[in-house]
Amino acid sequence: MIKMKVWIDISNTPHVNFFKGIIKTLESSGHEIFVTSRDFDGLSPLLDLHNIPHTVVGKHGGFCKKSKLVESSKRILELSEIISNEEIDLALYKHSVEGARVSYGLGIPSICVLDNETAVAQNKLMLPLSTKVIAPDAIPLEEITKYGVDPTQVIRFNGFCEIANVKDFKYDDSFISQLGLSEDKITIVMRPEPVKANYYNGNKDKTIIRAILEKTKNLKDYQFVVFPRFEEQKSVFNYENVIIPEEPVDALSLMSYSDLVISAGGSMNREAVALNTPALTTYPEKLLAVTRKMIELGLKIHLLDPEKITRFIEEDNNLDIYHENNKKIISKLENPIDIISREIKVLA
Image (cartoon, rainbow, N blue to C red):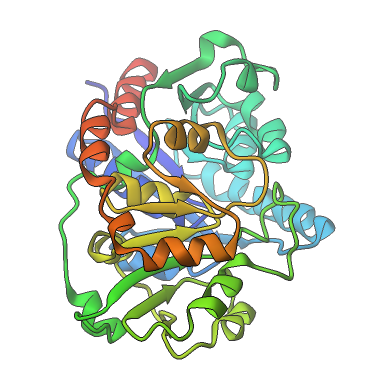
């Protein structure tokens, strides 16, 4: 097999768990890996936690559309200089506009992993420039081809991306002492809405997570581990039974240990499902195709009323009923690592 130098652009924290298994698989096949990232949401410390060498290039543009455009443009310029000197054979990315633009501009074949068909701005800029697009089959083909992608470029698989995140997962209980968790309490992991994302149009100043915590603040037998989206958001979750990690934590081990994961985002919920931990999504806008399919299969719950969510939390029997159903369904799904490895062989 031809050995390649593969550039992986990791632009968001949820992508670290996704790519770490892919990196390990590709390196074990003899490929050389070059990883870039950006300054955003504790991304670099998380890559360090997983011992992934990387080059930080540019930063996230924040809330402002102009700032997003400016920072993305700067990052394209910087990456163009770096990548043109690296003799890259293939680019691999997940929802990276800059990864798509730079690889296309430099004539480098690319594989884009897609699982959010609602990220219109990103998809318009990214999908038409990618050589191959790998996506869960829950996403209708026309939701991809409408961006100018030829159907022959699309590879769909029966599963969801986070199955890759838990490949070779090894539980490590060091997070218990790191976070100061009580092993006698019910543990619930929480994550607020992706308010800085271009595709998110909800209220950027309010989060349902705070409303839930307000209603559960007197539950003494519960501990809530909350992962804020940005530094300024920490004060919003200042409750006695809330723990906010100050340093990168092994989130997979934490979620595997937890009784429930409640997230207004997507990746953490899907990781919980892959780990067979009950998951509840509170995303307030149009649900992703992958999320809708998971709800239909009974793999996770969707609730938006803080009162109903609080009742769900307090009814302990609700936290255990999904395990057997999840196991049966997940055992039949494909791992995207296998799909990516196969397509890399084709492009080689």
